[in-house]
Amino acid sequence: MTLEAVRTHAGAVRVAGVEHVFGSRGTAVPALDRIDLTIEPGELVTLAGPSGCGKTTLMRLAAGFMRPTSGTITVGGHEVRGAGADRGVVFQQPTLYPWLDVRANVALGPKLRGVSKADRTARADEYLAMVGLTDFAQRRPYELSGGMQQRTQIARVLANDPDIVLMDEPFGALDALTRERLQGELLALWRATGKTVLFITHGVEEAVLLGTRVLVMSPRPGSIVFDEPAPFAAASADVAPSELRATPEFAEMTHRVRAAIG
Ligand SMILES: Nc1ncnc2c1ncn2[C@@H]1O[C@H](COP(=O)(O)OP(=O)(O)OP(=O)(O)O)[C@@H](O)[C@H]1O
Image 1: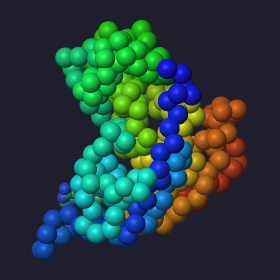
Image 2: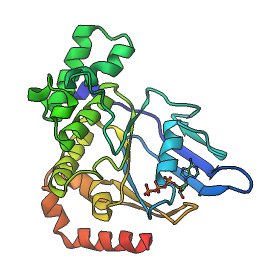
Image 3: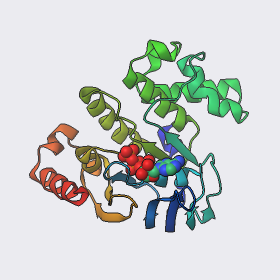
Image 4: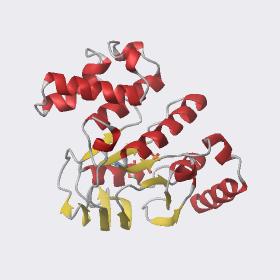
């Protein structure tokens, strides 16, 4: 399978009038105010905002793990009513099966969908190569560093070939150097696969560097208060992320995103 072959052209993600309230009367916690948002196929949208503003809630709604209190979310025109193979989720903490080796973890999704052993092994090995873990295919997760576990999780999600990848602070638990390395790798993967990505982060610089478009949410109940295109993710094909970070344009946008977060 070539990289061209895994390019997908999914439909847009449309969030229309979405509100979400946790709990019931008396204990109601309004988490999302009124979110209207369209994410076009191939966009890498980063979402930042103060702690507790509802970022994870929005992601869980898009993943189909729960239904909004009001409003609708559609993917390619179809309403999201539950989890689906068209959407893959990368969590902050890797969720790997400790009794399976790295290759088997990555091949698990295709296995559950009935893909033949030869095909799922080939697919797992291709994604492990993409994330630089070929030599670790037969290791168990506990033998890997945190960054390698997160790479494995990303390979596992991509092996399911979702149209949309939802990432909830995937690099939040990693040390700064590993985090920077994985940011560069994510940009390379995004360019290679053309996936639509929604990436939640606490990091303002991370949001500006990785996003083709940067969103900021207000404090709870969250609504979108900043929504702008950013040029750095696309530019990273030619210029190293470290150089992009050093530009005045990067500093200027980072400043404005920080101000929007408040
Ligand atoms: N199951 C739940 N029941 C009640 N309240 C909840 C529940 N889940 C989340 N909340 C509340 O909803 C609000 C939004 O939570 P959410 O996890 O979406 O925020 P977040 O922006 O992802 O936060 P962080 O950046 O700290 O991860 C928070 O105030 C949180 O306490």
